[in-house]
Image (tube, rainbow, N blue to C red; front, side):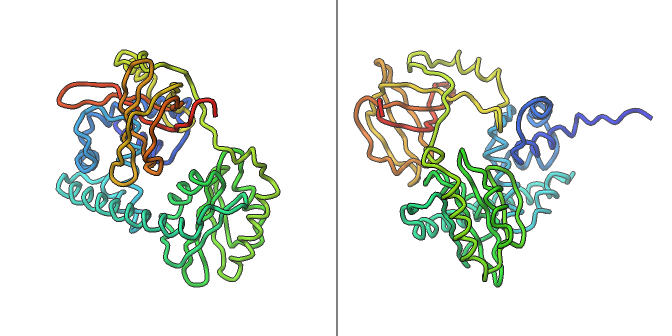
Length: 349
């Protein structure tokens, strides 16, 4: 018997590897690299339909397309409804069925975004300023267990401390925990395992099930563990920079060279650059949560987007340090270098 040709399945391997946040190193990076080539020209009806609803019009599918456009739609099925919708999309050979399933996933993803926004608003009202403790535990009967993990991650980033969000339902609650650098959330859960029905995960993210009559005890014990085991230094947000650059060094040739290093992803992050002494000329809030920024450094003006950083508006003045990912923006056939801002701070602070 001839060996089966498994290459045609690399598109699915690629999606699963990136969507499940598997480290893109060693053989995983090789599989994803070849899988992206399969994806770009895949005739699989589900992939074609997923491209359409995700707004991917080019043949060149990237790891970022999968992480931020494919994966949220595929995962939305399991978060709010039934995961078999995503499975059926990926295995169907009927283009008509694929289009219907892709539209359903897209609709469920939009619903997921709405639920996520509501939970985030309610959680922020409960958290106020995050408190003085080195961990935050919040619970509600109005939250969806399939979405609390995403919101916990947002809060952990906002308050720079581990966060547990729990969706209560009857006598039990299912929750998700997200950590920060210097924190091992699974060790924290292990220390209070006697108060939990079950738990599992890894250093940065975990899940748990807790009975309602044990909820308050869990909150107190988990927070006490983090208060005892984390220092103030552990909770200082850090941005790891790869290179210091000047705006006049950013050009299409440089970005073309960076593209040759792809695919980037988990454990193989794309390079993060920093420019110092930049002047912020003006800012504009986009879609109520993002920030469009115009900056100048060494006489060169750059346009940038800072996602989920609308709270900085209005920020204006001289001498800021900016951490960013450069990218190519194309408008009416003209390509330009733009910046995706990761962080901003006054120079010297």
